[in-house]
Length: 88
Image 1 (cartoon, one colour):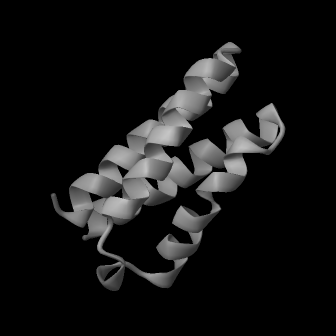
Image 2 (cartoon, one colour):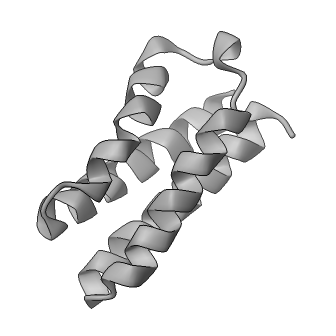
């Protein structure tokens, strides 16, 4: 699988995280953040920009943030990663 597809999948997972927190379903949000974190290992890091590497490293922080901040960060990261995947 190429980076474009993997980044798109991570963006979708993060959007689901934000929706889960917004709906009050923390279990759903945690399941999808775990999926996004797992998918990070599939990325070929040699072919992505440094800001994306930083964002992908910061995904783990979403698990420990307060719900509101976690939802906002997940949605913001989702948008950034989605835009980056389209530029590849």
